[in-house]
Amino acid sequence: MNRRAVLYTGMRLDGSIADRAGGAGWMAGTGRSPGAGTATPIFTEGWAQWRGGGRTHRQIAEELSPGRWPYPEKESFVLTRRQSGERRPLSTAPRTGRSSGGGREGDIWVCGGAELARRLAAADCIDRYHLSVLPSLLGVGLSLFGGLGGERPLRLVSAERYNGIVDLVYERRGEAALL
Image (cartoon, rainbow, N blue to C red; front, side, top):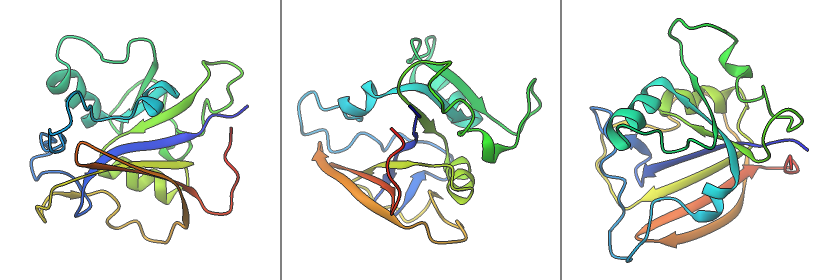
């Protein structure tokens, strides 16, 4: 059984994922649905490993969840260009550990900024795209897939709306899921 690398991220309707300063305070939706969170329970229960960019890791650890890592039961890896111990090409990072033989069952959540998402999409390392589109248009900020450099044909798997947010799930077109 193989794991899927799933890019799960929020973005504004205009395609940006952060404001000019890299902030994501706009990710709350409309706030009209009582108890509505920012992630669907099906997704949050379906992954075993978190892989994110260095800036995203810092933002989660220092701003969004200071003092405690919000996913202590999950394996977590930071993909960064900074000097560290083990080094491997970024394009192989999501594929490494995808066989579930030596790890926990579940998908790999790829959670990063625009640069990480673009690089992995360009290297065809994303099996599923789970995008939460939020009700905001600013026209400025970091574009999620700007400069991708080529088409990635996808097929729609599901669409759901809650709290003013639309969750769209896509997989590569023409390929069977890797489950």
